[in-house]
Length: 471
Image (cartoon, rainbow, N blue to C red; front, side, top):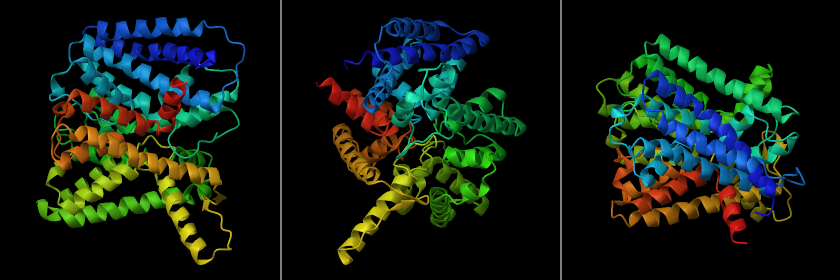
């Protein structure tokens, strides 16, 4: 990493992150709790941010490789800083604290806590607030607070951090793009918050549930997740989990009153079809487990919304599901929702491109001389996008296998091992037969944490970073 602009940008990110740490610090003051768990990380982030930001650079140019490195390093450093409140408050050991912070920022929601109801209000707030920060991306969040550059070269950062095969500006200016993205993000979060308040959820719980839903996280304030909330609150959360799984470009088109383009979206149609088909299959396979059909339908919609959007909230035990329903749930974990949303997983757009690529290969065998282009959302898909999607699928499978092998050394059943890896790598957090990830060894927690980062950053930034470190 010879390019000093990488360090300078990380410095700016740390300064921006220190500003975000003011919010849980204020919450600690309001509830008269210790402020040191947030004040110390704030000062550390601010100090190192200023030091790195004072570096003199000869050029403002940011290349694609630099964008990947800045994103990967920033996430790793911020994950470490975010773990400090748990350590300083004497809640968790270092490895557990790092697991919890990475789970929060990557919006996974897998927790090592066994009793969240005993935690301080400020710690509960921090866990959910990390979801809200990480949902749209740590760098995107910081870039919305402070400008990282005077030009649109920051697009390399967005492309490296935002989920999906490609990220484009909604408008010519990246500043306005972020304005629209965060306007939509905050509006939907506030709307859910208001509806939860209307449903008689306490303001504190409503705010943190909205943070978790917006970031498609999964950290709860209660040990039974959302099971104790009212039916109305469960319906509200179900609807907003689904909405946050939609590509934010769709919301932008609706905002611009371009309804025709919005509802012509191929990815949205596939997302909706898989979602409704999955709900139907779950209901048909589980209705005998419930006292009445309405309860079964509510749980079906809720858990499918939770799994397909990688949120991880729960309103009942999914451990009782029959095997075929569990397999469907695991498949939904990996597929996830739309690109350009706040979800983890493989993404619908990649799934569509992969299937169209397979179809083209089969037709090529039948008609060797034919020339066929793959179209997605009405546009030709470049060959480099198709190739990168195939590479991503291959790496996705390889890393899951590697992490599964390491976690299997702990000696738990194949189902628990499979669930733990799928749940963390796909940034879901909800897993069968696992109430807390504290059961795993420190080595397993480290590899599961790496899996969460790989899943959220979509592999390539981490690979580019470590490839660069080897030089």
